[in-house]
Length: 505
Image (cartoon, rainbow, N blue to C red; front, side, top):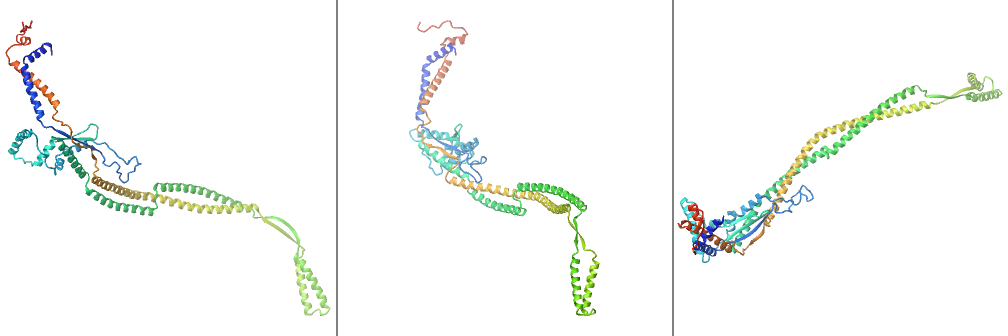
């Protein structure tokens, strides 16, 4: 705005000052009177803290405090949807009705302004009553109408960057504002405990857990029986053991075959060499006296002596003489047959080379027999181990199926056991009023009204009065045909003003 325009407005306000003051005074007076007559409105406040988990130290079965995958304390941020849900529940008409179900309606407006406010409310309610009468809409009873009215004065909002919901209720009575918030929060927590858990859930999950326990026992029994029957306790360890054993047996079999071939060839060589080697060797030859002749000659001499003696007593043809002659004839015949006095005696001994070869041959044959027996035994063990590996391959499929059945039954059982425990704990928490929402700040009686604010209303009334006063003055100026300023002359004639003469000259 330039100087001319400013001078124009200044001159106009000064010239129409009576109008400005009258309008400003009326408006300011109405605002002040309305502020003073308006009953105070008090706002009770309470705060609700929302958590994702209502019992952070609750640990389900199977969770370990030292396990990084299953920590004992699980915390998750509260989502915006959770906060909005809690706000909608807090301010819902249903919760309000539950809260005021046993409460008498408070007294209506009191004081010198009560008739005026009641009349204003009645007049404002006439259009709604006429609409309901015209369209035959259901008539609300007094408690429903009261709940609707309370809902209009109830509000909730989330404190920025927090999990806290602030609940506000406005009323003309500060004590009633506090009382209503208290019963509202009580009804809200009771209903929250009601919808947080179904009492029949614990029984259902317990029954399912018992049923799954039976199935788990049956699956474990089948697995145990199969393990006893097949002898499989640790598949990987036993498979590795069988493979290692098969490798070892195969190496032993190969070594045994090589040793057997070597010993068989060695036995053949020893046999050929033994056949070519004499068993005994001549040691010495000597001449010795014939001992038979040496013993027979004294007997002949003795028989001749006896015959000579008997001839002195008997006849030559006597029986005794004939006996002795027969003996002498036999002895003589022997002496005639043995015509030499010495015999040749030759001694021999075992050939040590033949004996060594024979011993080696026996050892080789024994070794061949032992190696053949060992080869048959190792071959049987190899065949048995291969069959065990084959049987294990088939048994592993059955074992895996049984183990999966056990694991499935175990997972289902643990799942329902956890759910049963959580349901039991949830029911206990409900009885103890431990929820995922809690009252962070209880309702308090407000000490000062939030409306009307006398200083602010007074200042606003003054500003509004000045604005309306200037507007009235401008309207009056526009309707006045007289010319009072050089700006008006310029606007009417389009000529520049040379000078302005004051009324004082």
